[in-house]
Length: 80
Image (cartoon, rainbow, N blue to C red):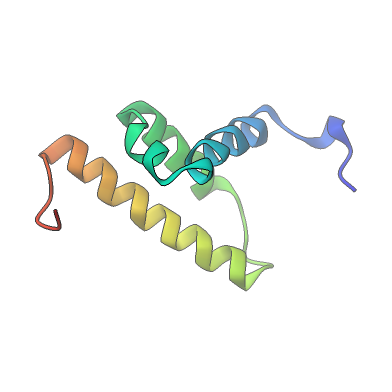
């Protein structure tokens, strides 16, 4: 079990943002551009190379974040 002292503020922030988007599919679309960019940064920093399934999920999430950032900065994409 992980000692609470070992959990960084960045880990807490990453988990908080991930909980927001996993509670509801609609919550992901409600994230601000700033929140999306911060989540992207936090997820990219986290190393999941030891767990192939987690790494695959990380890549998929980053792809989804990038698409949403594009939609917010360039207007709705061709996919909608």
